[in-house]
Image (cartoon, rainbow, N blue to C red):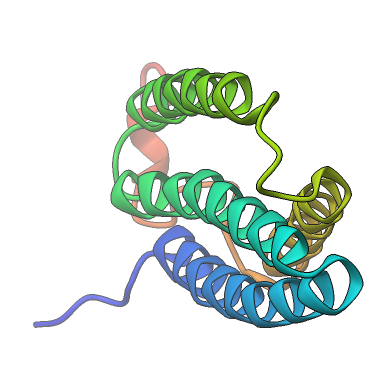
Length: 148
């Protein structure tokens, strides 16, 4: 007997696929436009922006997909823990590259901003289109009622 995939798992799979597509488009487009606008510095700004966005966005999607069938407290702890680790990594990367001049900061910023806006649109669209129940349809109703 096979069971249907979890609605949360299905939603996070859609998010992960769309994020990968967004990042591929952003990598090609951001690097190309960056190169045309600012030369090799623009190219490196696009590469850095896309790489940092990929690290941040894909990590969140993978963690949520991995914990989709876990209890809420486990999924929440994994999300918060991964978020804290990602913030530290992003902070360190920004400290390392802040005084370097091999990349264009404007292209870097625009690439990150587009990644953030695109990921927000993807996540909201997937959440609105998913059919995640608010109750567990497999739970028995009389288990929660005292005296039943």
